[in-house]
Amino acid sequence: MAKLILSMDGLVLKEIPLLKERMSIGRKAHNDIQIDNMAISGEHAAVVTILSDSFLEDLNSTNGTLVNGQSVKKHFLKDGDVIELGKYKMKYLAAPVAPGEVADYDKSMLFQSGPLPDVATLGDPMIAAVAQSQASAPAAPTLPAAAIQLLSGSNAGRELPLTKTLTTLGKPGLQVAVIARRPHGYFLTHVEGAKFPTVNGRVLDGQAHCLQDHDVIEIAGVKMEFFLKT
Image (tube, rainbow, N blue to C red; front, side, top):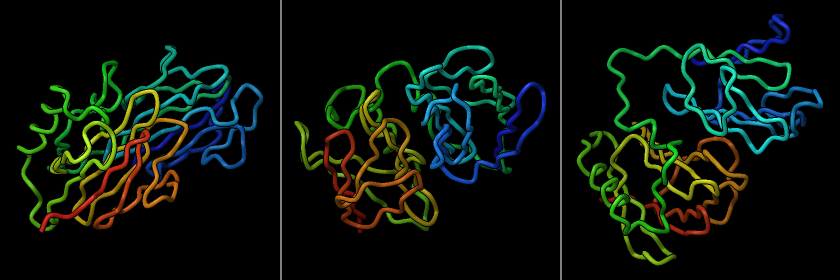
């Protein structure tokens, strides 16, 4: 399990295991990691952990977030990276990868500088290429095949098969979420944006949500239906 080592002025204050898929960091009490200091914004940053990888996102904080001395907005964390929030530092220690565990997705897909797969423009050639690459991935034998169908927007009616470990959905800078394909189901997790996705009209929290057949998801203003293929 990955973890953060919180310190200030060289003194270790706390060891924080990344137990949740999304852990918020900030001054306010509702954060998963609360740092009660005026240099820290109420909701300063968040760490999203999917499989054995973690991603850091600055939540438009007042004083910014540094990783290894460089200001970042979104950053794929590597073992030994040092996150700086004001006078506080958090060293990231990655979880060991289990033997044979290989992610069948490109990590840069989540936080690359270019456009992410955008459900509102699923007909775009780049998006079509993403969908085509997904179709080539083998399906796990214990999990039924599934897909999402767009219900609104200019591409309403289009389908996207969920065959890779992670499928990224949304609009960068506005709202991004991922659907993770696991042996025991399909799970929706919020990754980026102030607003969280909704499922059947209910706003999700920072935890992964297990999708059920015919759930209606809304991400970045676009509605889509998750369904199992039988």
